[in-house]
Amino acid sequence: MSGESVPCCRGLIQPLRSVTELEGLESQGYVQRHLQIPMDKPCAAAFFAGRALPVVGMRSQTFYALAAELRRMGVQLDRAVTIILNLWKRQPPKVTAAPGADGRPFTLKAAEDCARSAYRARSLKSYGCNSPVWSEACVGAEACEFRSLLTRGGGQSRLAAHDAFLRWMAARDAEGKKCLTEGDIRVYCALDSIEARRGFKPGTRLYASWREIAQCSGIQRHKTGEVLRRLFWHGLIRYKPGDNSRRGMASEIERVIPVPQPPQYLEGTG
Image (cartoon, rainbow, N blue to C red; front, top):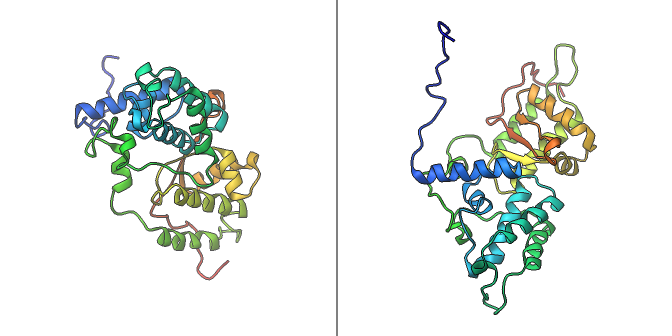
């Protein structure tokens, strides 16, 4: 290695702002290694990593919220139920055996019911940062990268993004062919719909399975990966495919906001 230049990493590695931020990153790392889930909320990761315990009076809400986070990350129902049941088994007796408001303990069946209820809901109910569910695991607004992504200014409104995407729908290449196929347009609109359904701003990072995208877009599931690669090639999304060898890890997708101009946009065509 002597004599070889070493690339400078300055600017690529951001300094930690607090000990709590380090704890949040360690929890997220645990979930990534042991569950193969790129959990982006450090507070949710803390529960799965055993760094935080549900409050006795909020056990059902906490397990429901954790199941909702698994759903948001694109984890399928059967696997989510298994993860939730394993989490219940790791809880100390003071959490599971203590009587709640109804005088009953929090049973394994109750935990499973919470998980299935979170997936049965027509729209995803993801508990926000101000919910008391996360109070035992919150790393603080200053140290939470997830919160900073949700509250960052700038960007582009959903309506402005729609208007910008209309240019792509009308754009043609040098040979006069449309730049985007009908499937491309369907999947891109599905990503916008998934963002809105989850209460996210345009361009927020999504973890979604091909199955969810196919159901939302109406295209065949086996064509979803091909379409996502085309949208990535056009520069409309950032895309990291899921890993089927890791029990169907969801794909990581992020719409590029502001929506870029098409390279061969011809006004008036369509």
